[in-house]
Image 1 (cartoon, rainbow, N blue to C red):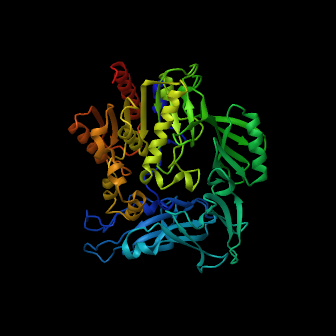
Image 2: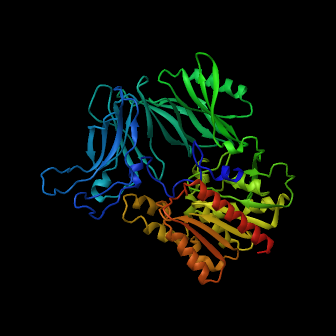
Length: 565
C-alpha cells in the first residue's frame, strides 16, 4: 500500500511535464490531422478530442456550450450528410443530449471565449489554417460588444514570440477581458475593456517571474486572482473577500500553506478547497461561509496518511559561469544529507518549471534513501524571456550545462556521493537525462528516461501530417543542434547504463523515439533496457504501471550502484 501511494494517480492532477513544443492555448490547434483515411465511407476526417466545455452555465438549466470539430461526410444511399468543416460551438442539452449550433463551424477558428453566462464574447482565428491547413501560431482575436453580434478587433498574439495580448477570460460585470501580455521580458496580467475603447490596464507584473495565469471560481469561471510562482505558487487575489478568506485559511491551516479554491456553489457561499504542502499530498475541504464550518472531504493519497515524508527545500545551485540556478532539494526524512545516493531530476516541457510542493516522484526516491535535486535550468519557463532563451532544444547546451552543474553542486556540497549519482527524467526531462549522459559521460552513473525525445529531426517529422507542424518545426528549429543535440545520434558517447519506459499510444513523443535510442545504444555496445507499455499514453496513466515503473527503476539503480557501473 505504501508503494502504491506513490504510483497512484493523483485525485487533482498528475504532473510529469508539459507537452513538447509550443502553440496557442486552444486544444484544437494541435490535434487536427491534415488528411485521414476513409474508414467507413462516411467521414472525411476525424478529431482526436471529443470537444471541451467552454461555458458550464449558459442560463438554461442543464445546458452547456461545447466545442465541436466538424468534418464533412459522404452520402451513402441517402441525401442526408453533413458538409460543415471546422471548429464550431454547440449548445448541448445534457438531459437529452440534443445539440444546437451557437457558432457555425469555421476552419480558421482556434477558440471561443464566453462571459461565463452563455454569451460568446471573443473568438480567436488563424487565417493561415484555411489557406495552408497549418497553424501559424499567430492568433487574431476579435470581440463583441454587449448586445451586439458584430466582431471588432481586440488583439493579435504570436505564440512563438509571446508578443501581443492573449485573452483568457471575460468578466461581464466589468466588461473586460483578462489576459497575458509580455512586459519587460516577462508575462504580465492585463485587462482590456470590451466597450469599444480598448482601454488596457495592468493588473499584475512581477520583476522576477512570469505571471502564470488566472484563478477562477465557480461554473461562471469568475476571475478572482492572478497566479505566479516564485519559490512557491502564489495568488494575488483580486476579490477582497476571498483574499481575506485565503489569509484566514493560511492561519487556520498553518501546516498546509498551499491553498486553492477549486470550485463553489452558484452563490459562492459553499467553497471546495484544496490545501497541501511539500510533505502533504493535499486535503479537500468543504467550507460553508454561512455557518463558518470547514469539513474535510477527502485526502489525495490516503495510503500516505501518517507517513513521514521528506521536506522540500528551495536552494540555489551555481553554474560554471556563475549563474544562480534555482532548484528544489528533497532529502530523505531524517537524513543528514552527506554522501547520499542522489538523483538529479530535470522537469518536462521544455516550456515548464518545477515548484515547491508534493512531488510523487521525488518523494518516492527520497523514501528509498536518495537525495533528489530538481533544477529550473535555463530553458525553463516562468522566469522570463532571457532565462527561457531559445527553449531547451535550441538552447540545449545552456539547459544541459545547468543540469550538469547542478549535479556537481550537489556533490560539492557533500550531499551526493559521486559514485552513486543518477539522472531521471520524463518527456523533455528524459531527453535531458540522455543528452546529459552524452555531454558529460562520466558524471552520471545511471540514466532513467521516461517517454524521452531522442532525435530532434525525427521529432519534427512526426508532426508533418498535423496542423501544428509549423509550430513544432519552428520551436525545434534547424541547424547544428539537430545533430549535436540528439542523443540517439550521439549514442556512442554514453557510458552509463540506460533504462527507458514508453507507452505505445504516446502522441506527445512517439514510442519510436525510444526504440531508436535502444537500437543505437545496442549497436554501440551500450547497456540499455526499454520497457514498452502497450496502449498507454505519454503520462502512463495507470497506477499499477507507474508502481511497476518505480520498482523497476529502483532495482535498476541498486544493481548499477552495487556493481559499480
